[in-house]
Amino acid sequence: MLSLQNKSVTIPTLEDSSTTQNEDLSSKEYPQWLERAVHYMIENITEELTLDDLANAAEISKFNFCRQFHRHLGLPPLKWLWRFRVHLASELLNRPLYWSVQDIAFAVGFSSSSHFSRVFREYFNTSPTEYRDQFMSQDDKENKYPDYSNQFEIVDAIARGSLNKLVGGP
Image (tube, rainbow, N blue to C red):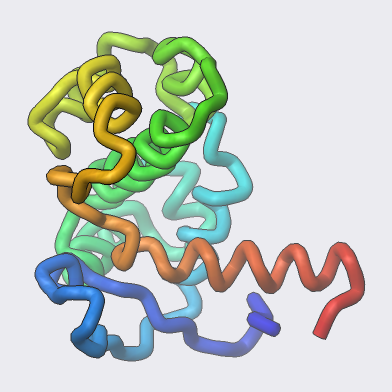
């Protein structure tokens, strides 16, 4: 079980996104403040988060937080958060939930569907609606969109640890 106290956690970086599924992902240890910040992002995914919020969660200055976050993960904090939210949205768009694109945008923390669509297009080179239509019409074809999921392994690890605490698992 992942403990959020007094341990480092492995967080994938941008360089990891270029690896294939058959390759081992190279990972390194990251500091506690980064784990706290990412955990805060997960816990508050639907909220409008600011750099001040994230720096406070990390318990370091905003300037140092921004500089160190970018150094460790290759993106500024809010860009990383937007990419994570878009990744979650892509997962929801791939499911037969039949939620509107606007509902999905709000569910993953975007405060406007136009901002969500703009960020989604930046990462997937298509609109969320086109992405959903493409996915739904090509169930058996290989997905042509980039897979950023390995950049968010920390989220799975923290979520499993939190879930295990809730249900009394290992």
